[in-house]
Amino acid sequence: MSFEKNYGNPELEEKLRDRSFYTTDSNPEFLKEVEKISRTDAHMCFQCGSCTGGCPSAPRSSYRIRLFMRKVVLGLEEEALTDPDLWLCTTCYTCTDRCPRNLAPTDVIMALRNLAARRDIIPKNFLKTVQAIYKTGHGVPNNDANRAARVKLGLTPEPETTAGHPEFIPGIQKIIDHYGLKDRADRILAEGE
Amino acid sequence: MHEYAFFLGCIAPNRYPGCEASAIKTSEKVGIKLLPLKGGSCCPAPGAFGSIDLNIWYAMAARNVCLAEEMGKDIALICNGCYKSIYEVNEILKNNDELRDGANEVLAEIDMEFKGSIDVWHLIELYYDSEICGVEKIRNSITRPLTGVKIAPHYGCHLLKPAKERHFGNAENPMWFEELIDALGAESVQYKNKMQCCGAGGGVRGYDLSQALDITNEKLINVQEVGADVLTEFCPFCQLQYDRGQVEIKETFGKEYNLPVLHYNELLGLAQGMSPDELALDLHAVDCKPFLDMIL
Image 1: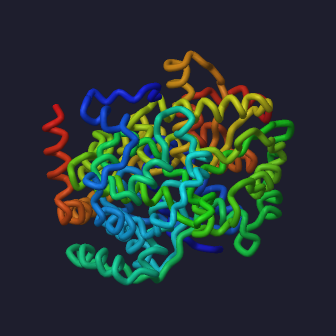
Image 2 (image 1 turned 60 degrees about the vertical axis):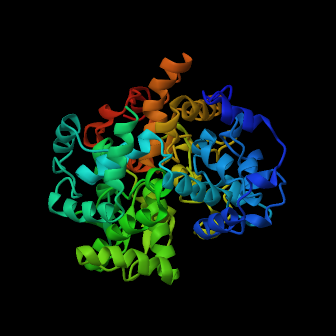
Image 3 (image 1 turned 180 degrees about the horizontal axis):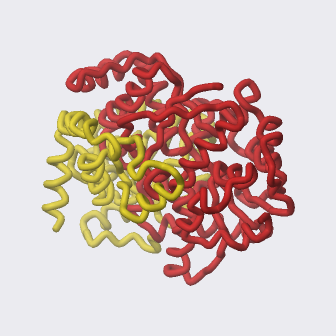
């Protein structure tokens, strides 16, 4: 649980404390980009706060979905993409169901994460999932205890997935390589060590 | 028999194989045949993959859909997370030419093409659908009613939300899962904030475990308050979060619930006469014995 915002980055913390809006910080293209990726009209947000009110992450952290919506509309790209709270959305879509403007704040978060990822801002656990899928096709791969249990159930030790049919794995690797994601995951994780 | 390509995902086959085994066996008793979908991968995880690049998520999920298209069968699956990826990407690519062309450009490299020729279903919605199965058929398949067991329903998120893109309508207080639970001879119970997320999704479980567990803990407090004997869901990822999560909550917050957590397929299996051994209930982190003692 994030009891206090402390990112070990004095510059970012200073910026987050300052609620003033400076037009020099604003990138007018940012809103358009977010709207394209999220496929939702974020500029229609009138800041009612229904999203934060129904958010399961909000009561136990400093994550405020309404704030991210505002930053998008104001073009505050730098602040939105570098705020670690961006990764506390569980994607439950409650805000999306309750938005009186019929927007999808959850998909705005997904778009912001996509844009952060382009700057190599991606949590480690996400990248490890990429590595696991590249290797096995599974984000949560099989193991020996599970194989033994499967046999007792009358199932094959390996499921009928890429685990039982590894001949499908090169195809998956080709898709991931098309986007260069495996190499990026390896590089970012190596740099972080 | 209604036949479907059975998309397994990761957590069911690789952590809770009883979910897979019970899906195959229980569905056969109500006229549904789940056929192996060879070469399926991770859906891929909507939180992890979708967050990094939605285009990769589309392409990877589309590959799984293509495998079923080649079989000429609709997909049935047993996980809300898989539903988010497979159902949603199938619908998006059917209706958005630009995104479909983008995915097909990548799929062409592995000699596949997304055609948009099949539909994707969660097995639980097939169970509830009276044209395929329906509550009555479930009730009639029961040989060992779960009499006297209070069961709390957890709907999870991605089968119902966003509601405008799903089949069940308003997701503020649905009651259809309760009908399916009551059909087992058990008593479904209502609790505070029933529709709240388990806390695991969106990559939060891996990014900030204590944050995820705190959400789970709140749910468990509310479920315990109404005296539930069992928590049931239809999502192995929610199951993992509630089941293994209780061990982690004990370590993190020092709170203990000992609340058995079972996938609806596992409960249905027990109610249809399957033994706990046929469901690998010993792989659950929370001991299911107190519940099993009530019905065996």
